[in-house]
Image 1 (cartoon, rainbow, N blue to C red):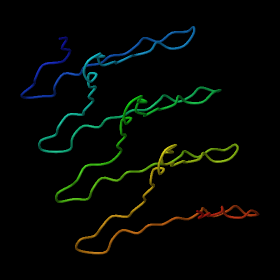
Image 2 (image 1 turned 180 degrees about the vertical axis):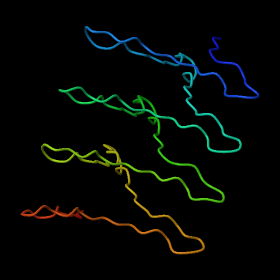
Image 3 (image 1 turned 90 degrees about the vertical axis):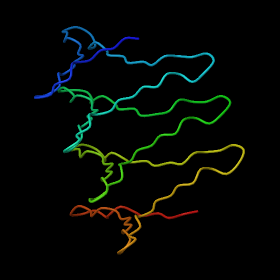
Length: 173
């Protein structure tokens, strides 16, 4: 096994571990690849990324983002996807926040940044297609309020500009 880490501190901060690629002036920037092991007889190796626990206060933040684009071009893509499967189910993808005792559950927000040219960026939520049985279900549900009112569900298009119509809402089978 290969272990890379810093020592424990009892009166201060634990040491930082930094992995970075140097900058260059020709061609694409250098890549960083983290890959877990492949197995031909069992499950492949797991890849775990977890922030530090704060036993007396907040846990650490995990930030995954691409850098800003230069004067021309787009910022890099972020792709979160499970692999395909040949003889079984493909892997699931979970996005959510943890439960809270004594406070609110964490918010989950999916939004598209604003732009100054062309149409606004789209958000697409699509359930799975099946060629042999029923397609996947799509469920949007507000939270239960066990001691008070349940959460609201709002579906609306945004207001229009000075001389245009607001966007359409289409509900169809």
